[in-house]
Image (cartoon, rainbow, N blue to C red):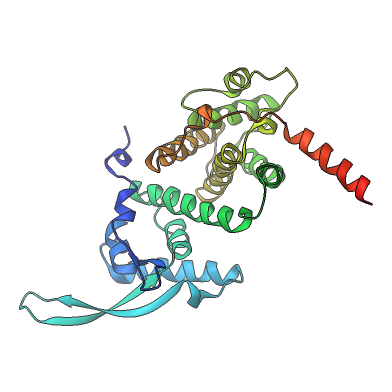
Length: 278
């Protein structure tokens, strides 16, 4: 059993702060301790890498990393100001992505901040959309990410179609508590040629999209080689997403309702409406 079981997402919630305007943030020094970095100068190197990643994404660094001074209590009872930094959720996400992957708590942080960041992205992007529009948007995004995941899996050693089918199945088993693609297909009462992704609601699709994108990133970031290791990685990522859903009080994906319409039906109706309005 991994040492990660001794950690919980609450360790990141416990050090979260809010500005007077209600904006959430984290202090670098507190995140340093939680991520088990003994020295501030070592952790600053990680922060610098995160800033670079932020800049490379054409995002304003100062919007997410704000240097401040914090007063600390000395043994003599006196106080001294030390360098610190206020971090947004996105900044924390970049930091854990650039932290030591060998630390169990870092792996947990990667899942926690990625889930939270993804939730906010979906909220901001999809607030104005209907459920059907959300499903279409996520399903289309999934198609693009699946190509990238397939490439990463192939680089890791998942070569044949049979290998890739096993690889995908392991991801489902991790996320769905042991249920594979066939089990999910059966549970949704689908016909033989119907695809399970086309019969998921937006919440279930989002969980699966997150599983896919995080597996893709992990395979590439850690340069994982060998199809058995790739399969294990996909399962572990799926299981961590499942654990996070549980931590957040969400419904397990296998218990989410199956929509009446498939994504393909929605697409056909949308095209028909577009033709009729021309």
